[in-house]
Image 1 (tube, rainbow, N blue to C red):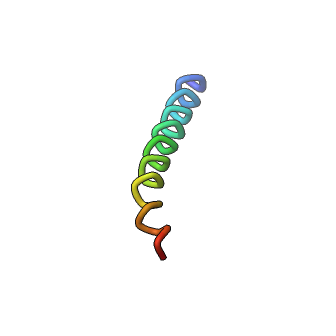
Image 2 (cartoon, rainbow, N blue to C red):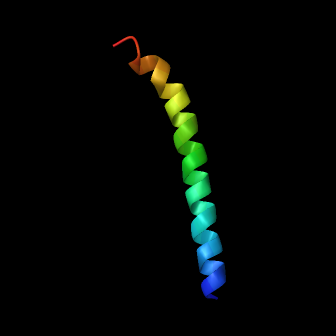
Length: 34
């Protein structure tokens, strides 16, 4: 059970990183002109 918990935690981190990088790529061009 402990292993599954860590796997799920790792998957959540990977998803958060993917979403964060995508948002950064979308928002960066809007911030740069400022």
